[in-house]
Image 1 (tube, rainbow over the protein chains, first blue to last red):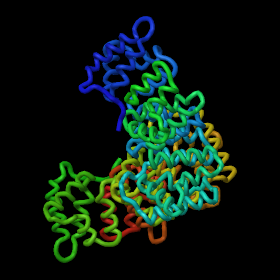
Image 2 (image 1 turned 180 degrees about the vertical axis):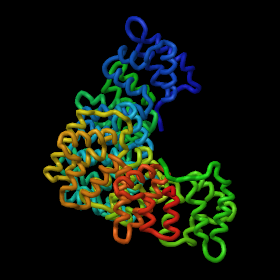
Image 3 (image 1 turned 60 degrees about the horizontal axis):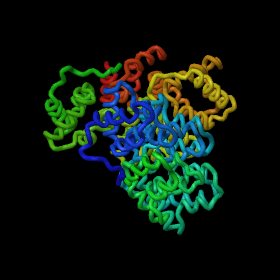
Image 4 (image 1 turned 45 degrees about the vertical axis):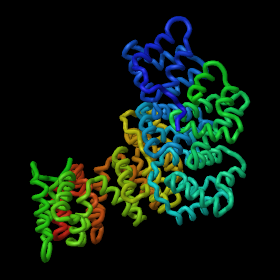
Length: 313
Length: 313
């Protein structure tokens, strides 16, 4: 469930646009007013506000906000204002350009989304950047990492609920053999992870646990760490349980010295309208502290207020 | 342009259904009557006829035709009656199950169709077979051939007209190096062929010709033949010129001792509503004989009549 709260019915978009105009007009910006409006509107409402703003003031709301806000708040608002599909296309593009540590973002987009959602993100990517996400991922990576990432991003998985238990058992064995032999870059791992349906993959991971008395991610994390392995583990986690995966990202982001604001913002902004409630609950249980408290401790100012508003404080 | 000819307006679907019922009723089947109706109706009309037949006679037209017809005619009618997307999903499934020589069919479907058409075929495949085309291709192949085929089938290429000429030149060089060094299975070949837009790939192949004074397919066919290379050449030909590619398939099918009826039927049935007119013209120029004549010489009976009707005789 979402944590985002918004009034129903929401005020007319033109009224919100007017409030935003007042907030950005003149000397200084009223960040609180911006947050009060935007952090309590859903994707459709935000879109309508942007359109109303453009019509009323003949300027682009996003560009204006970018010039008025700064730092982490600017980044967070810039992420938030888009609808989910556009936002993920932009996140993917930023990740491709940054490379390395940001491959995790590509994995999230490829493996958390449903096949239809991933397709929509790829279509938005093409419309916006005039290239395919696949070719950008492929041309900015190499070796085994490329094979894995391109397979994940390219896949248009079957989305049905059918499970082939015999296949799950035989592919669990293939995965186990590859892990035991430390041939993680094994083509078979990429084939299985890149083409099977999520339901089938979860059955395979369960078979793995049953037959080898350890989870596949534990099997993998026993090995020496490298980029390929970390992408592989992220993919498995995203497919197995997106909520647990995102709790992990939040935990790492908040526990990092100096805090990883990019990761923190990304998870809160992308999940607030989806499943941040579940992620919050998992976080609380796992860390014995409420997510709100942890976020409040590690952030400050308007950025903090914005995140807390999205978390549903 | 299509070669298929059909009356406008077409007779009411119920009238056609009635003609077909008469043709299949009682002792023996009136194949000529079946051909007269079905070989002169477009995809929409054929669908309407099937529906009218089902409503009127409470039986499946396709199943009835299958039990009434036989041999090459049965196969051809079975292919023809579906709409193009369903037909290609079925062709892909047959090819996956047959393997080896039939990989060419997978390449055609992946590389001749537009990205949106390929997506539609993959959706039809999933709806019909409860699995993805990608996973079936991946699990029935191995090694470099798998990598190439899965990349081609998975790709959701950018469909815009933009060309990056610098990129075309640099990737032409990468392809040339791979071919000169005989590392055809080079990851870079698969990356380029599997992810770039068709317009961009054609620019790259043109650069190849300009810079190295030979076409890329000539460069490839100079090498020892194997399955991977033949799939690679087919992919390049399908991307460069589908019509020339299909002329080649027809030529090979007709010149084979005993004739390759599967290839012959496939090209005529799949292209009759699309571009068989251009393919016919290329065939005539290349072989100094009209396609109709060649087909008439190598086939016989009702199968021959059916193909000739689709060719637009």
